[in-house]
Structure formats: structure tokens, C-alpha cells
Amino acid sequence: MNFDFSDDQKFLKAEARKFLDGNAPASKARAILNDKDKSFDENLWRAVAAQGWLGAAIPERFGGLGLGYLELCVIAEELGRAIVPIPFASTAYFLAELIGLAGDEDQKSHILPKIAKGEMIGSIAVAEGPGVLSPDGVQTFVVDGKLNGVKIPVTDGMIAHTAAVLAYENGQPALFLVDLQHGSVDRENLDTLDPSRGAAVLKFNDSPVTRIGKLGEGWKLIESLFDRAAVLLAFEQCGGSDRCLEMARSYALERYAFGRPIGSYQAIKHKLADMYVKNEVARSSAYYGAWALNTDAPELPIAASAARIAASDAFWFASKENIQTHGGIGFTWEMDCHLYYRRSHQLSLVAGAPRLWKERLVSQLEKRASDGSI
Image (cartoon, rainbow, N blue to C red; front, side, top):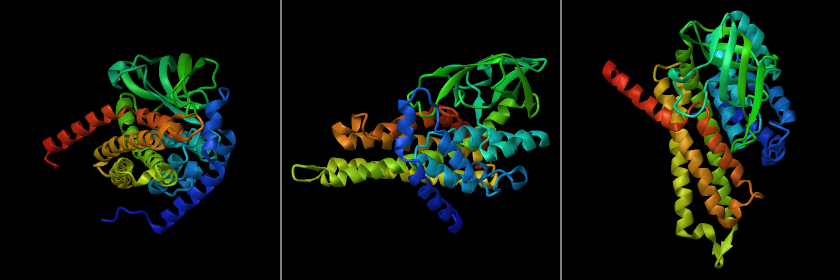
């Protein structure tokens, strides 16, 4: 079985890197980090939308390119390498995927073309504070088509036009689409470790909603959606961890100490080798996840969990060791190392922390073992 990308997909990857190298240097993320009045780079968002990337996995009849998930994975990896300060993940991995997964024809026809053109920014609002994500922790409710409750944190909640919200109606969990520009929705900015990917507190006060999917299927849809998003997030994390390794290696070759490059010292060699090993493990897991996602294989929950765990670990480790390799200068604000360290933590918490995915992986393996499928 060949898990490698095709020549066309590799060409797309090369073109995406060329575009982002020219249009999304690390200074873009730094500018958003330094400007408290901005949550994302609007010019970069429009440029990315013009490339058609937001609609890579959206069918052509809904205004997308209709390429597929493998192409979206390729794009995700390059976006992660460039740590782009735009709400691509919230919009393409979460809202667009949810609409495609559970939306009716009217919802698809209304929302997906806007996402493909970059006219709509989306978000997913599930959590209601610290702790493990579970149906029992949801206090938000819908009565007579009106939503009440608080969601915290919501990634890109300050800039999103539409949110998919998990809430209860008639005692059953369901997902609802909410217009965040409606006057009944209050938003409050949250200070986070990575302000280049903002977060918010959303407060709903009799906010009008439209249900997506069936009543009672809310939690099942969230699990399916998170499995899909986990694979795409893993590719972003792989892109970021590879860039950290590149940065560390380049600095180790150019920085001299005691008359020789620091890369010639065994301690630095070990750091770089450990980063490489973790990156390769993460990439293998991400490729497995991409295959499962693209083929809608029954192994997707297991593949997504493995990809999420390995990629989160690799990106965090690579971003940390990149700082250490740079030594004293690596801790300074002027270096770009901390931008990747911040993003590694941000991405590891989107769609649930690694601990949650480890538990999900174990539960899925136990389930398959009890079913006799492994």
C-alpha cells in the first residue's frame, strides 16, 4: 500500500510553500501578536481564499475546488509550517466539515460557497470551561429555537461570523448554527498564549439558532467532526515541527562556540536527532490518518487519535528544543522560536488535549478488540 502523495499533490505542496514564503513570513504572526486590536491578518486571509484553499475539499457544486482531503492535508502542512495568523482551521476543518457531514441541502448551498470564497469565517463552540470535554459538562440549552448559555474558550470566536454550538434541546444533545453578528450574542476577548490565533467567551441570550443534524446526535457528530479535524490539525503540527527542526539545524551549523559549530557537539546532535525521530513518527501517523480520512475507513477514530497524539508531542518537543538549541538568544522576543512554541500549545488544545485523545485511542482499541476486529 502506497501512503505517499501523488506527483500532483507534491506539486500543490511546493506551490503552497512558494506562495506562503512570499506572502506569510513569520513577521505576519509577529505583527498580530504585537497588535492587540487585530486578531488575524485580513489581507493574508483574502489572498489564501483567492488561492481556493478554503474550498479544497468542498465539492464543485458548492463553489469549492472538489480536490479532496489529501490535498487539504498538503495545504494544512504548509500552513502549519508558516504559522499563519488566519482562522483557516476553524473555518475549513470545523465549520465546513460539519456542514458537509450533517448539513441539509439548503445549509450546504448557503454556507459552503461563502466559506470557499472566504466570505464567511466559522468557529466551533463546544467547551464551557476547564476540564475534560463530555456531554455531561454542557449546560447550554435551546428552547423554542432560542439559545442560552456560555461557551469558553472559542477559538476565533471574536472574528467568526457563524458558530456551530453544542447544546441541549428537550434533554437531548444537538448542534446548532448561530449568527454571531446577531445582537443577542456577546463576545469577550480571552488572553491566550498565542494571540495570533485568538479565542473568546461567547454569551448567548435568546439567540436564534438553526439545528444542524438530528436531535440527539450532537455528541456523535462532535466525535466524528473532531476525528476529521484531528488529522488536518496533525498535518499543521507536522509542518510546524519540521520548520522548528530546520531552524534549529541551521542555527547549529552557523553558531560557533570554542572555535567550532555547536552542531558538532554531541549534546546538540542528540537534540536534533530526537526532534527528527519524533517528527517522523508524527508524519507516519498523520499519513495513516490522511488515508483513513480520504477513504472514510472504519479505522479513522484510531488513526485520528494516533495522529493527534504523535503530532502534538512532536510539535511541542520540536518547538521547545528549537529554543534550547538557540541557547540564550532563543528565549528573546526578537527570535521567532517563541512563535512556534506558542502555536504548538495552541494547536495541542484545539479539539481536545492529548490526554483526551489518548483515552479515545485506548477506548477505540478496546472496542475493536471486543468486537473481534483486531
